[in-house]
Length: 310
Image 1 (cartoon, rainbow, N blue to C red):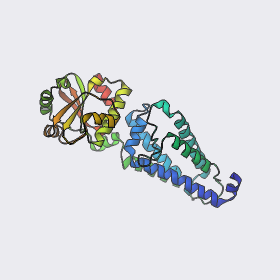
Image 2 (tube, rainbow, N blue to C red):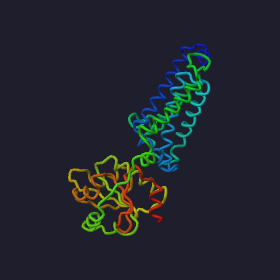
Image 3 (tube, rainbow, N blue to C red):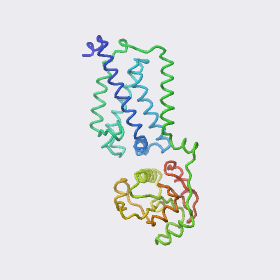
Image 4 (cartoon, rainbow, N blue to C red):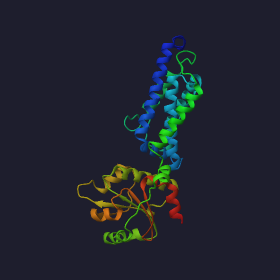
């Protein structure tokens, strides 16, 4: 079979287009649900959240570039073997994936819009390896000026993935992600709710709505940070707003995939006045006094750990 493909440049080119198309599709689909891919990498508890954001975008850039390079014939022999190496590395990862304790029902090969579980992803990788192996780098079309194309496409891919949906640290540097709350009204509302322990010591207070998908993402992110940095659940609490037609609070924790935390419920008008209508919002509270208020996207485990340790 390999010899037949090697002699038939049209077959080799067809395999290049097929393999490259899958890699490009994979990169695009991952980027369309980039926040979920960030969280998936972070869930492995190997990298901090900032590093996970950069890693996710670099992986997507690499997939996109490899897909373009193998179709266009840019350093074809090099591209073929890098692609095989990446597929082999992903396959080994899938074999040992249960060790990391992450969700195996979606390995994020194609993001959240086209899900493959662990076994399906393994089969997909094996099929791709079988497609890439017979490609003959010596036949078929190839672009001129390999070095220029390689550099331009690689640079464009990295810039695009880093700028269209920027990592939180870049977004914070460019636009700022701090917010504010009405500290006096917050303290009064806490007392009215009978949750005065919210005002005692160092507390990370999370303002959520039970129906808000970003609040669930924030809850997941904070739970991973708590586990990674051994932050006590006594130092993390939640404030929900009181809306009768929203799902019960207990469902929020279940849907977010996190253990329940102590929470208070504010009337909706009070909640919106305290937060300025922004949610999810994270308050670093020192004996009831706002030390810092952050939008959830910029929050990471280092900020949480440093605040509790101060």
